[in-house]
Length: 421
Image (tube, rainbow, N blue to C red; front, side, top):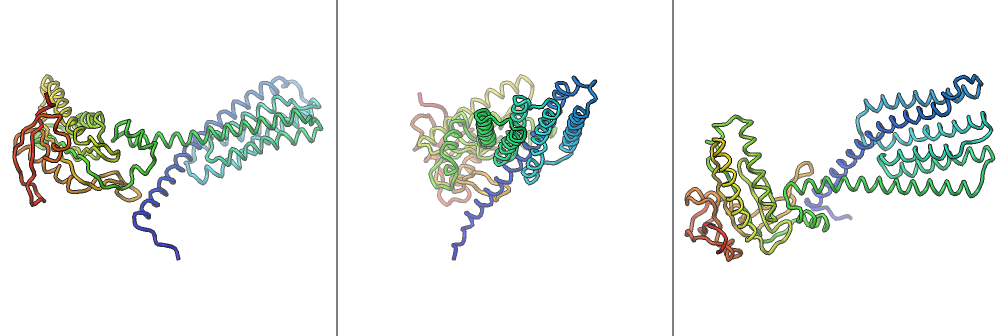
C-alpha cells in the first residue's frame, strides 16, 4: 500500500505541474511564431526555385517542364494557405506537437518531386541543390515544440535523399554516406541548440522573477544551488519594515495617477537600496515595504546589513526630498523598524499563486517597532537583539522599553543615528 502524500508534497507537485503547463504553453507559442516565420521562408524558397528553374524555361512548353511548374504552384498554394492558417491559429501544446509531423513530410516530398522532375527533364539529379534545400528544411526543426520533431525531420531528410538516389541508380557510397552523416550532425546541432534555447528562456524567466526581489549575487547563488535554497527553513534573520508617514493625508492632495507614480518611484528607490545591501524585498504593503536579511541566502552579518540599509534609506529619502522641495512637492517622511529573531521562511501559497515569505514573531515585532517611530519621534528604530548582533558598527541611543501589541514583555529599542566614528 502506497504512503499517502503529505499536504506540502501535494502542493509542491501541483506547483510543478502548473510550472510544466506554463512551460509547454510558452514553447507552443514560440513554435507557432516559428511556423509563421517558416511559411515566409517557404515562399522565399519557392521564389528562388521559380527564378532558377521555372522562369528560365517559360518559353519551353514541354510536358515535363509544365509538370515541374504545376508542382511549384501547388507547393506555393500550400505555403500561402499554411501562412494564412497560422495567422488565425492560437498556440496550443497539443497542436504544436502534432502539426510538424503532418507538415514536414510535405516539405521533403516537394524536394523529392523536384528531383524526379530533374530526372524526367535532364536525365539526372542536381544533387548539390537537393542537399542544400534539405538542409534548409531540416533547419526549420530548430523552432519546433519537441526534440522528437528534430529526429523526425532528420529521418525525413535522409529518406527523401536516399530514395531518389536509389531509384535513379546514382548511388555512390562515399558521397551518400557523407551526406547522411552531415544530416545527422546538422540534426544533432539543431536539437542541442533548440534544447539549450528552451532551457535558456526558462532560466531567464526564473532569473527575472528572482531579480525583482533579490540582489544579483544572491540570485546567482540560488540558481547555482537549485530549488533546495527556497525550501522551508527556520533560522534567525533580520526583518525591516519601512512605511511612509501620514500617507493618507498626502495622497488626498494627489490624483490617483500621481499617487501611483509617487509610490512607484519611492518604493523603487527603497527596493534598490535593499538589494544593494544584499537584502530581499519580501513584499510591498501599500505605501510600505517588508525586507529581510538572512533568507533565503544565509548570512551571518544580516543585522549589520539591515542597519546599513536603513541608514542608506534615510540618505536616499533626504536626496529625494531635496528634489521634491525644488519642485514644490510635499516632502516624504518615513518610519523604519528593524528587528532580528527566529522565523519560518519558505514558499507559501497554492499552485496558482505562491511566494517566498517569512512568518514568525520577529516579523510582527519589526512591524510594531516601525509603528513606535511615530510615538518616539525618530525615523529609525532597532531592537536590542539587532543591536547585539550588529550594533558595534553604529551609533545609537537606548530609548528604553516599549510595550508592543501581541507581546507580554516590552521590547527594548534604540535609535539608529549613524555609523560608528
